[in-house]
Length: 125
Length: 282
Image (cartoon, rainbow over all chains, first blue to last red; front, side, top):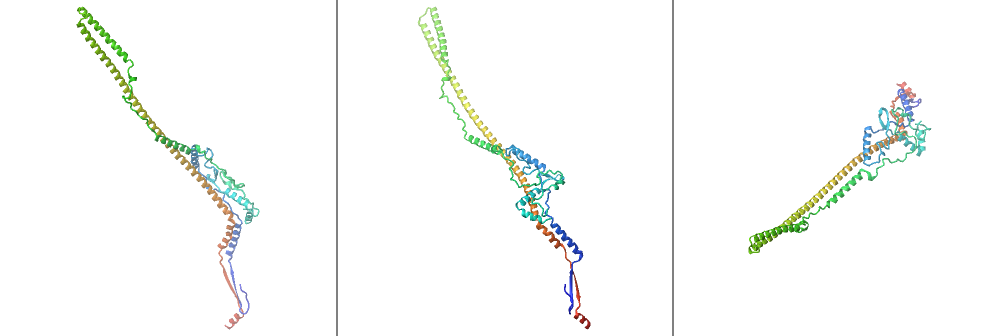
């Protein structure tokens, strides 16, 4: 923007953002800043489908054969040994979710580096 | 997510499972504590009692049996010979008594004949005569000849009977030996067949054991894959958590970049002295 007056006069140039775009842009920026304060939202639904009853039946039959053949001690293994039978979700869908593993990993990390996690927490409201 | 008051450990997820049809999680949500060393499960059976050890024993037994039968020697057959066979056990022990009885019979007949000749000679008033002497001599010669022929025939018949019995014994012994050899060979064949059957059963058992073992391995791979997928999902969530601050920067950046900035330019001019002079002269 130039000044005016003098022998030769003066010339002024002004650039303006139209109001119809300035207002939404301001609201968009404000919303982006609000979204910035929202931390990570984990997924607590099923990640992996569980074995179906037919699969488990086949596994049990095979395990029984292994027990009969002396390959494993009777009663020591099952189709879901070491992993649990899974969780039943909506619609009867059985599966496994990673939520607990995720939370355990976070707890482990927080216990090992609490300062970093405290700093992390300050980033989000 | 909390702000400055956010706890170091994330809260446990409880309310989000209310929508589940049957919230009976076999893997309960994390409620604190460090990962613990996993305990082994699926204790394998003692090696001496599984199907593979049984198959091994069967294979070993079948192999040992076959090796033993490879050295099988059938029994020798010794054909007996009459020439080297003693006839004594086969001779009739009563041969001499039979001959003696036969001689006694002949002699008694001869005596009766002599008595008859004597009576005839006495009746003819020729007893002690030459005619009687010739007749008695003739009778004696015939008697002696009959005695010799009879005893010889009896002895020959006895020997032939003994020879026949001995030959029968030789034949019987030969047949018995041949039967024993045949039985031995049959026994060997039966043992080889049993060993072969044992080997086949052992092979069958080994194959069945392998099938079951492969099934177990496949099941284990499925379980391991499922758990690996869970771990990968958890890692992805953790990456999402740790990457959230960086990702949030993009929100504002995108908002700035997405906003078009149309500009309107306004130019205004304020005239000066020369502008007025130019205007007046023109």
